[in-house]
Amino acid sequence: MDMSYDYTPSEKVQIFLSNINNTKYNREIITGVKKFIDGDVPDDMKSFYSPEELKEISDLDGSSRDVQARMPVKITRHYFEQARHSKSLQRLIKASPNETLNLEGAEDPGKQMSYSPLEGMIHKYELALLYVASTCSAHCRFCYREELIAKKEVTRPDGTVAPKGLARIPEVHGYVKKHNEIVAAHGGRHPETGRERLREILMSGGDPMVLGNRNIAQWLCALAEAGIESIRIGTKELAFFPARFDESFLEMLDGFHELFPEVNLRLMVHFNHPDEFLKKDENGTFMENPEGGYEWLDDTRASVKRLRARNWINIDNQAPIIKGINNDPDALRIMQRELKRNGVENHYFFCGRDIVGYKAFNVPIEEAWRILNESQKGLSGVEAHARLSITHYKGKTEVVAVTDESIPGVPGAQKGVVIFKLLRSAADAKERCKVAIVGRNSQAIWFSDYNDRVVFDEAGLWSMYDIAPMSLQHAA
Ligand code: SF4
Image (cartoon, rainbow, N blue to C red; front, side, top):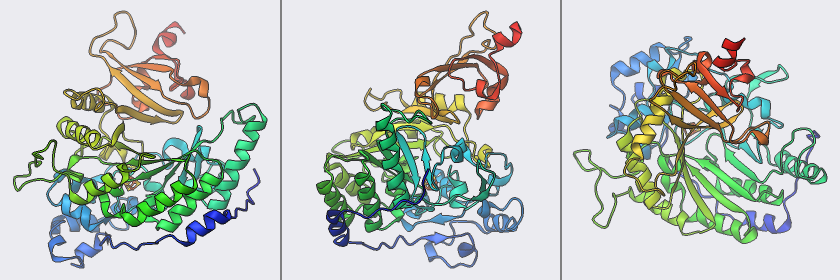
């Protein structure tokens, strides 16, 4: 496709952009373990890592097990304040030598480069994802974009090797328009890829909220002018620096909404644990609000309220279930209840991806399903909307059910089965909602751990690797 796109914002957009308050923020970020080693951090942060922890990490610097090269260390003052009283958040944010004990994993998780028509764009469904920033205010150790954030070299389908780059506004604007014109001229499907009209864009990275208000507005307007109907912003900023969602940001969004009232905005937020947004007393117990529910951190609550005051903005939470961080049904139950009560939808929980070093973080698939199922006991129907998803190379896949009973006479099903449902296929929309069933393996943390026990696979999750259901193997 022609890559020499040009885009000039319309006059109304140019006037809007020139009036934006491009507020600067001081997140008081500490980057790198060396700052802690050198004592170059505020006094109250000096004991965040013990001397032994610092030595163990720095001993690995420059080696094949370099922890900071796998994923750079970064924390905000706000997150530090919550993490100092929370083992779960410490595990999320503090580097550990365990991360590089086993460096198995995919250099390009989800084979994203196979779906990348432009630098920084992943186009799979009627939705495309953009890398608009290559960092976040702080860095989760389990990050499933570690290859982007750590600027690792990735092999592309054409054989070239280079770090993943960021998307650029003119190219993306031009690509969306061109794609949609071709789709419209061919009865609703692209003649080569079969994809539908591009209606939605997920701005991601990294975290788009590290960009200034004007830069975010440039993206929003360019996408709206290209014909995008719904824009998502994937962000963990409500956890890392909630004050970012201040009046100046909301003023910018209001201005955007005035210009493009039909464009829906969704914040795809990322809370892993209620410790990230609830107040605790000196015993470490969540503080009940006499008027109902629990007490939220003031900044976080105020930011959510500001967003919720606009009925054209939706907020959805999605988070992976990670070992030692939130593999805890009680924490997840409180989180789902409190988020829904405050107008944040519970969208997805994820099984961890096969990133480099994933064995240090991922909870077995069947265990993640049990944890989520357990956490939803006692929740009302509307509070328990979240599904458990795992991102297969073919597309987003739900872990629908795990059974305890065997299925008599079915090879591979003696210990019960796991049922997967392909929620959508990046390559073929017709495969939506097709199912695969495998025999149980309580240790399985990735699809390949079920290779020897596929029972039924109409979704083709294993046939793409030439693995046939056991009944067919026996028949052959
Ligand atoms: S917020 Fe998301 S992209 Fe940023 S470090 Fe955490 S997991 Fe990675």
